[in-house]
Length: 288
Image 1 (cartoon, rainbow, N blue to C red):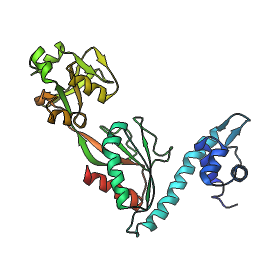
Image 2 (image 1 turned 90 degrees about the vertical axis):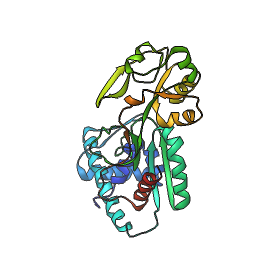
Image 3 (image 1 turned 180 degrees about the horizontal axis):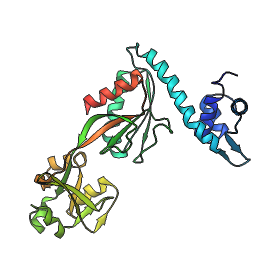
Image 4 (image 1 turned 90 degrees about the horizontal axis):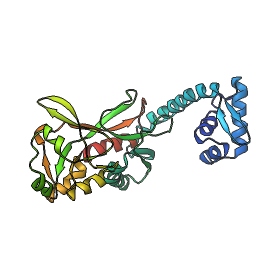
């Protein structure tokens, strides 16, 4: 048997969770997918999938083999990508993910410009605030903000994020100036997911617990609340910059602004990147 035979089919079944989904992904028949997976199992001498009328699951052997099978696929893709490096024109499909707000406001407009410049490139974008497993879910490139948790991934810094504290002029008129971190104890702070706000105090990072009457996991909602004078907000600069320019909000505690966080283009550990992915990373870094 060709030792590659059945490998693509097995990975597709494991990824899609069904033979039907795998057949659609590979543009072949369910019978062909099933036959090749059975042949692979016979050649290996292990059952990789448990099949019932309702469910399909990986066996322990299948879970072990899946990780190695994906590495073999990536190795083949790297080999072909090395040949394509000679091509000057980016081409092919890029599966991309980014946080929802930042992706909508900043990444997708640049992606559209990139696609206009390189019409042979196709993009499959998933906007989500969840951090997808790039290898397991077949993602070529992710935009991530802040400290990177997975050290096995490769990353290039494409921009940075500043975090600011803002209030409306009306709020300051009513409650007085905010000149020290200690002043936050008496303020109505508009809360997101975190109970602590980050600051730099004479070169030392401090995490200050804040309280308030509103908690919401939407930056846009907190921004609107601040503009309406409900309280003090700490958000990334790209939420606030328009409101600051229009003087709907003013910054406070500028002397305690925390260090900038990186915005990264992150990709799986691959020896070769396609011309299209390299070009997109460079384009984002230059544009952002």
